[in-house]
Amino acid sequence: MNGNTDIPIKAEEESLGWRARLELGYTKNSLRTVISHKKHLGPLLIQKPFYPENNVCHTYLIHPPGGIVGGDKLQLLVLSGSDSHALVTTPAANKFYRSAGNTAKLEQTITLEDNATFEWLPQENILFNGSKVDMTTRINIENKVRFIGWEMTCLGRPASNDNFSTGEAFQKFEVWQHQKPRLLDRVQYQSEGPFRTEKWAMGSKVVSSSMVALPADKDLLSELREYLSSIKTHEIQIAATLIEDMLVCRGVASDAELLRETLFSIWALIRPRITGKLACRPRIWDT
Image (cartoon, rainbow, N blue to C red; front, side, top):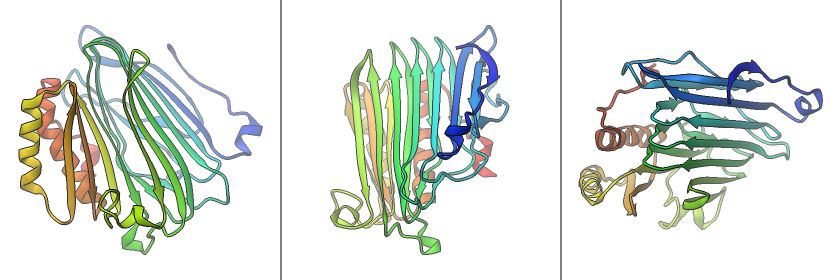
């Protein structure tokens, strides 16, 4: 990927809903990681990169419409080059609004070349009543990469009496290495039934998350489990396991902000071991 251009939107595509596509390429130069490729179609953009850590490229994804409806399709393609280090986050949650029948689609593909470091730290996806959603996040990794990433999904907005009483959503969070699956995490969110109440699923909580980090080992797993046991309450439950050198955490909580801040604290705990850097909280999280 190279260049920095806009892709024209076709009229027939626009009539079906928003079509947005963003390509990003990160490259390590002699001083720091830079965005060497940027190409977009429609309302999916980035702000200028920030460098609070000097050599790490902090990037904020922006979706100007502020919400996604049935028929919309958003695509993100990221290539993180060898030896690069990028951190990508969002200034706000993805909001999936009520659908008139069509499915809203969000496809995110992140590829890490040899020795790349990448941190994928978006805010939550909110499923409003009546939404119909298909979300896929696929991480493709090569050799000796370092990765921390998560996906969070909130069923409705309970504070506004939106409890996702109708609707459906399918979410996939996958890690592949050399075209072979390392993790296939798939959830079918349902508006009613045992999925909402049973302990094997949401357990009457409203927000869930999956988090992946690598490379990890048993010492890091033990340290994290000790921390999780110290913060476990009725309001939030998070479990961690190790699959070869990949740390996997899954959690549910009664409040999106509580789960978000807990994931941030986990990230701060494990980041030095994974990336060799202390946590540097993106400023956008506090604005």
